[in-house]
Image 1 (cartoon, one colour):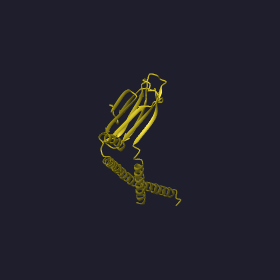
Image 2 (cartoon, one colour):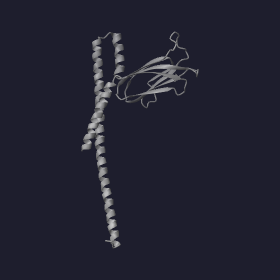
Image 3 (cartoon, rainbow, N blue to C red):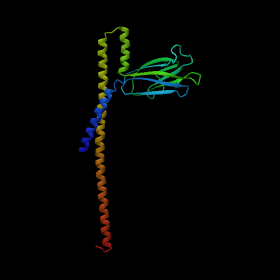
Image 4 (cartoon, rainbow, N blue to C red):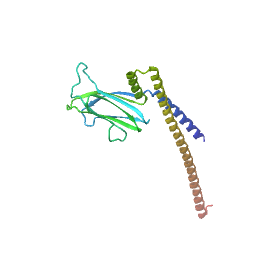
Length: 227
């Protein structure tokens, strides 16, 4: 019983830690990235796990122009594909482009992947790519800001809507953490019961073996007429 209480307290502390981490890192929904893309058949792929269904996803990518005084060389192009979890048909396909963007709604949870492939004919060419991936509230904020700028919506109403969506997202994250905490408590309780049963069986086996040894020795000594 004491072990169960300790494990429950540990699970509750772990739940609070995960909750604080999720709230502290909630702003980490925007993932800007710059990487080098070499002439390779495999290309480079990145994945993002999305747990919330019906989340908005927005992405922007562009080849970095190292010489800003001159336009990008025409042979600096790439192919870009965005795939859903365990999907064969991509959500987004762009061939021989220097920049682009995509947006979709994640109707299922899982790992969403994006792949970049250099299409330049020169194998010595290596260029950098800026990639910005937004999900959840960050993507919705960017989408709503564009709408607000286009239609000149009142800024206060926009901020209230943004706060409402953020609160809903935090509530859903807390519900998910509570479910995980309940599962952890149940697993700890089942594990404690199994360990207790295993200890009982071990003690019973040890006592049985000891009793058999005593009985065997007693029988042996009686046959030898030692006792």
